[in-house]
Image (cartoon, rainbow, N blue to C red; front, side, top):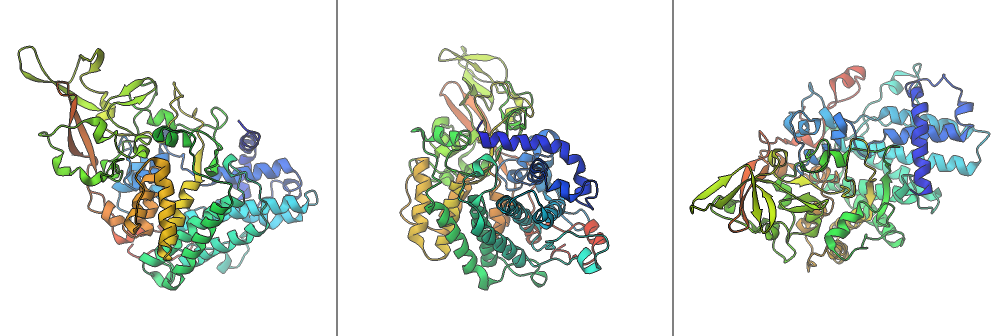
Length: 588
């Protein structure tokens, strides 16, 4: 563990002591004088660590941290094992004004208050030098911009609060109206541009501390989002939601420029340490601190761990609670084959009991990023095979065709189970593999230590390609996409298109909590999420031919619903009751 990561994790430990004061800090911080808080670096660092801890870099809420699957479930990449698990509610419920925004909700004004309080008071310190004050000010201004970004992608315009509210403030201060969505994006842009002027060139993002390049990465992403919404969306509720079409090119240009600055800094590159393309993409997420990582949320077993390995490891291995993230066949079809075939070239109409398939061609010859991201039948893991078949067909000694669901067979000298563990086959018969640590032989809750990458260089290239495309710089867009495809071992494209850019983004960033928001900002979410019955697979193994009969099944109990109002979440009625100046989003 490097020194910077050790320091950040120490701050996380300090915040457990300091966090008992949080409720007071978000109100009137009279439990301790500001002179003490911002005269002592340990207290200041603990205060900021508490803000970091509250950031929605990844959602580790829910029972056993199951909410880490929230956004991929909403975006129809994978679901959760059981409907009682909160992420599955993101697509099963109908959002209304009465029911509120549900589990996707994020109203980050406690963090905003803490940040505003620091910004108003740290400059009064007599103990800190100007360099330290500026460093901390820039750091938390980024965190405020990130908080507003997480709210604007959910609600559109939200109240823009940049100073601490007090109980004796005028009503227009205590009960602010919603700013427009454009004003929030412009605020994020202005904040980031201003702090970038005075941020040092030091590179600390991979160790979990905001730096100049983290700010550039958020500016790249947020500008692209704003451009997309203006390009494909409409203005609603007097501008509370929507981006003016006249601003689109400027936002694309800002995303292009900031992405290019990251690219030309020379400090980041695509991870490419291993010749085997599947191994390389796997290790990208395990080789911490590599040059693709722009900013990560850091974890360490015992000190500050998470539960991904315990939740996602397939049944049949030593995880105590396994197979919780079944991957949908709908996203599998986005992954093409290394020989140039499209993932959709296998027609769903051919997935019937009359056909059988070589599993190593059906899955093993797909994009290596697929094989690094998804468990499928006979994936190798921790010295064994992962099984997903529900039964085994074979011809017995009497020449009869038999289907077995129990027992063991001899397959070329190896024991072959007639059927897999039922947890593996229950939902989609495919499971999340991306980011799992194969060296963790006994994964238990809270003891995984992989960092989660909030921003990485792969996304920067995708942002750059998309912005370049809409600015008419198609050659640059094609080159950026081909850099990713070359790293993955996929055939290079000879021409670029909107569809190609979008598909590459879904494949490269699969299961990294991007697709849901991308489908929304492109305004194509209904195509994938409305009136759609997502699919899983059923595998039955044929011992005689060493092939699989593969058929489709419904992965979810009902069709997904995504009406046009769902591009934004509803504002909770309780919030409107507290602040009557909040207007509801259109359609609710």
